[in-house]
Image (tube, rainbow, N blue to C red):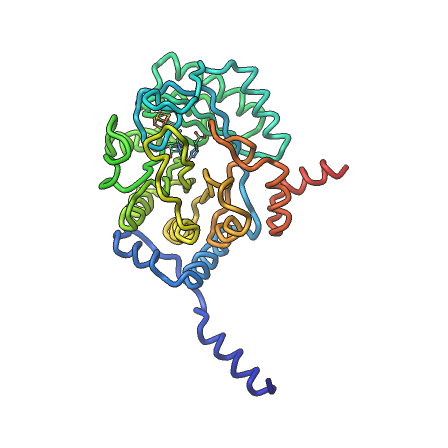
Length: 345
Ligand code: SAM
Ligand code: DTB
Ligand code: SF4
């Protein structure tokens, strides 16, 4: 290639690169989100990464560790969930964990580099005495200097206030899918129940962690509908977990078609574009995903992962595998660097 050809090629590349992508604003129609999802993948990735870099420092990945503090025996029938009492999944019901056991797990997560600790309970809705006990757990974990998160099912306003007073930073409550598909997945509660809890959490001054699941047999329009619901919450959630369904034998959704990995990456990208300042978490399903797809998710704007070898009851990549992956990708999470240095020392 001569010098002139090279200059021309460079010019062509420059001409095809948008100078600056303005951060798009809501409200979002389902159609507008569908149009984003349908873009050529490279254009979508480019747009998402551009938005991402306008709002977050390069290479910053949040590490959040999950602990199931009360496992199984749940009266709801969420079709994806191994913890429902209706499904025979082999998960044994356990009562709420004691505070010292939870603190030990949180300290171990902190030592491994996690900054956020999320406590999950398989309740439809906690009772007053449950919230009192969880408030003690929240206070203890907060005392370790970690960000606290809980996911306990539906919350009444007074429960939300009690948890806020104990030091709860985030409450996770997912919308899971579009309203039109919701009754195909669960019929023991309504979409409006979910929205009401989110409003109670918001009113109590707790940050909202809310996302959904891809791969439950939903149509593309339902994926767009989920993102529209999330992005149109006012304000949109501070954390947005995007889960790829973990197909657990015994659950009604165990035989769902696996998600096309590129469609999953698209969901991450569209979450990033429509909720530019949110922590978009590449959540359940990483164990089945492979390093290259995870790298594409980070390119698409994911900047948080669940960190630790277990989600609630199913598996997750172990700390060592994640340390290696993040290092290989040059994602310089400070905590991971320190962890890696600790391992090498
Ligand atoms: N019981 C509470 C509730 O449903 O709000 C809290 C725990 S629940 C397990 C938290 C979230 O985990 C669900 O809303 C769902 O999005 C996600 N989840 C559960 N099972 C899953 C699975 N098999 N694959 C992917 N995500 C799952
Ligand atoms: C979320 O969106 N995903 C996490 C967390 N919030 C609570 C739970 C994933 C659960 C995966 C299946 C299991 O281990 O129970
Ligand atoms: Fe119960 Fe939550 Fe599982 Fe639904 S997702 S069955 S509410 S633990």
